[in-house]
Length: 283
Image 1 (cartoon, helix red, strand yellow):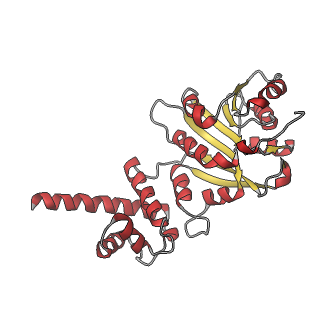
Image 2 (image 1 turned 180 degrees about the vertical axis):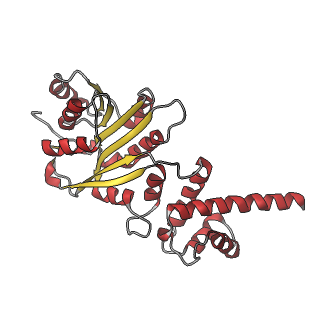
């Protein structure tokens, strides 16, 4: 698109290599009957690739100065609908109308994490609402490493747990800065999110486990015993007993606990709380 001026306020770095656009689209396994959502159409390079593969493309673009050129670029693809809107403001409500859909997008760096959290809601939809089947997303490499990090890794933390609790996430591809205009200062990466084959836990326990993790990681340099006692305002004796019930060493660090560990801990905290209330009533 002639005269293109990327805007810093939107975090715009436009993909310039068609071979990469084709590869990103390929990761989504698109079929002619698929509905695919793109967040940030930019120059339309990836949009055109999606339009050739999917039955319907809904693409969001916040930069209204791009719209005229974008609509011209996409005129030969009648299966594309351009939404001139901020995805975080208008996207979630629009997604609810789609039924089953996929997402393929080069996300703006500054808002990648909040967008991902919005998408996670559609990986575990309530009955009767829209359902996200696959999301293929280009993000900062640092973010991709955090999203896919295993327990014990340097990049592992609350974001890793929250995303892995709601999805199966894969690191697919590293993209160097030269593939974009303007080139970002860091590498990018392509990840893929899919629904978990089975829910990690019932919603109440999952929420409690993630809250425990956030509390523990606020004191990352401390042991899980100290973090748990301080975060829950419990004595170290009580916190140690809860950890022992779960088979978790009191000397472990927050980053050494897996999602399953935090889920077990959340159930133990809940069960001990219920037992304590029952003893108080009987007394």
